[in-house]
Image (cartoon, rainbow, N blue to C red):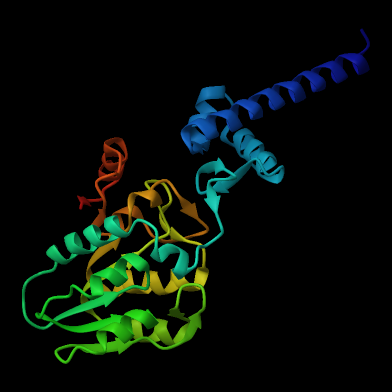
Length: 270
């Protein structure tokens, strides 16, 4: 066999092996929901650089989406966002139970200051706020309107651009105000929850406001029904251990609750 033929055969063999490895990577990602560079490098006994090239190639073909340290199935990394109207009618009983459980976590002292994020679950909490809460800061147009009728409550509506889809104010003005505040408790909504990607949302502007809310509050509670589990959206606004607790419904599988707790998150089931 000539050197030319031998070289071609080796190259062809490497290429076929790479295709087989990449096929197994995609299969594993779909089974597990996520794969990491370190785990794959050990599994296939290749360098991390080789795995990164595999993942980049698979991402280029639309089979995987790259995330920090690895990849997820392309269909798992979500970009679409539902409107307020469509979310309002989903899981109503679970959302009310979550809101009630979240209220029970409030410190009981007069003059409490609370930040309430825009969202259909956090909106249910607004109607339940107790008399010892003195001030509410919110970027939700509908929540501000609801709370404004209370004589015992000071309401600070964050200014800025209003997103039609979520009825939330975003932008530099809202961020500037939040950076100047120090509040007792923040109640946040989220589109996605995962131990690896944290709490995430599709829109960078809303993510920036949520991140500022996390930073301005002494205690942070994320309110979300269990359907949000294992969803990963474009922008992470908080690591999993940056929240004091996730308040969710009892339909969250025990294995998922254990996974979140192992990542450093306290889980409250409503």
